[in-house]
Image 1 (cartoon, rainbow, N blue to C red):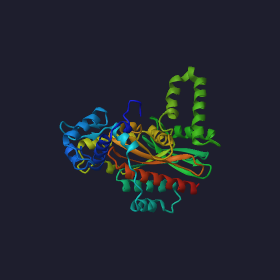
Image 2: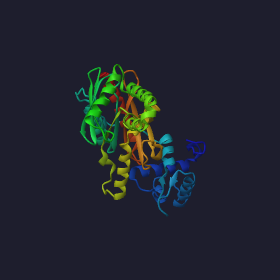
Image 3: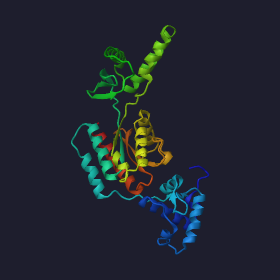
Image 4: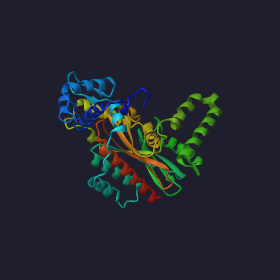
Length: 354
């Protein structure tokens, strides 16, 4: 928060209670909370007019907003942030939620990708939101790379690692690629790959391409620029983002505005660079973090919140993250322990499986 942001200790007891009850009412129902509603729940008996005056003060501070004239109040993004940081009561993980997550992670599969797909499905089902799971990238040295053309717009890269792990990834190749050009690209990569991880290989390739460019720049500048797109374009991130439960973000009435909101959300999600951004959010601090509205750099959408936690391997290194995304009126007190428990459980399983 900035120095100009109101603090809870600057509010008197009545203002703090009105603020808390408005936020809790909004999170519970999604509807604005009016002064007459609060007269029935306040600790002290006060008139609706008194409560309206308090609400106006809180609105002046930027903590509450009024969506319609003469309507009740809802918390602003700033208000939600203040509530989450100072008034949120995080409950314990209930037995039913724990059992559903344990059941998914109790699978005997040795395939980490399959395991994490199950984690995403469980988180989505338990929270009724959309789940995000960032799978760990494979850090073993690359033994062999092969590119296979599937169509003019789709190609497959086969990655064989030194520890025997094999990954197949579908990607969109630069326009004009042919089977022979893909073979040449694979030969180029394989000549550099020995003993290097994907991250190391990317750095070496960029250096090699820069050197080649200097050698032939005067003879074939245009061709070099075209060729560079193969290496410097999108797709350099090796992490894998798993998204489950998109339908949970759409209300039952399914208005056109909601549909547009969901399309915007997942257009953002599918940008490759956001995968790395997701891990950066988690790496910024240990434990569960909450990003509300525009605080959430992963999405341009202002009406969503992300609850995310990193998970670690046996060396206590952050290797991935799990999270839940939903509307800003998430039940944070319930979602936080679910995400926290799932991240710790995934970390233990990743550690046990090396």
